[in-house]
Image 1 (cartoon, helix red, strand yellow):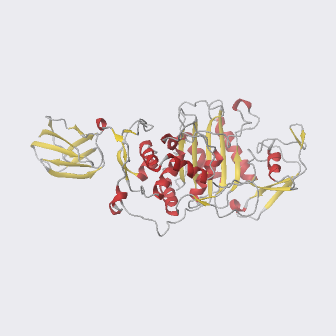
Image 2 (spheres, helix red, strand yellow):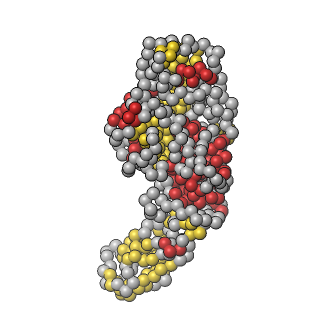
Length: 485
């Protein structure tokens, strides 16, 4: 298990402190040093603000100095990694975001330098004194369902175990995993799909199939290695872990994504300026971590956000209680959470709609442009599906039973026995059900090969009677006889 940073995390950064008192208690004599200009962000020389009377801001809950001091009671000076300017900017952003949202909605953000593990900013709520939103609760430390934000870890482990490759074909269709029958959020199915696309679309069935092959215990072991504290219902761990059926906190999830961004090496995030970390623990192979970054950087930014290659993933918990977005570039990682502190649902909330725009705004307030992602390791297998080793070309679940009722292909248009006008471009044909890609034949002769679209224009057909056939990727077929005029 990853060793944890020796400093308890102050939930907000240095605040609620006025007139040398903390809610009526004398402020400790030890000094707190906060970075006023962090060189990792500004490029300027290191300087610190030293004070025995911290400024009154919303940056830290009142108990923060006590918690920092507890890490080293004998120290007279505590140097924090927090960037004062960035902290203030993100507190302002948090207040702006919740002001535009419904009553009781709360927000939390964590920013870290994933190369060093230093936490640069932490916002536990939009305002410490906002009792209506439970602003006194540090939501960076609260256990919440992560939704789909654990999916990249599942894919990374599958890449490590050579169960899959980004170009491996997975099945997204109704599946029974020994009584567990997950569905996609939109209740639609994509048939056969590349692992890359399945992760970008955040499909549930493919990731559950990979979790089944890995074993839920393997996923929990990886979380332990990454230093992610977790809680789950009693009993044996189940496949629902991959879909957010577990409790984690925002800071630990940022630590997990920092490990992915660091090439698969996990380090504990820290608040205090301490001696350099140990080398860390290997969580994923370098190539697997790079694959994840490449896939997640392929996600389209939210509407209105900069068109950059930020590697990010969103998540929405069951019942719309939590909206997540976590992303990273070549230097920094930021995590965003929105929801209600009391855990009640927020109707219609989705991570992609609510949290992702905040993530991109946070990066824009961190720095003017993204740091580039690392190049692929020389050992990275960058090939198309057809060039993959045979076992990696297609993944099949080991014990899942696929439901045939929704799987058999059928020609939706033209219907059998119909008389159809032949268009200048050919015949419009549509297939429903089945597994892509599809091959179309006219009177036994191929006219369209390996097509993933379910609606196609078939060229080169003449008038008269014709028997139209479609064959899916599993070899099942359907046919219709029509008259073209």
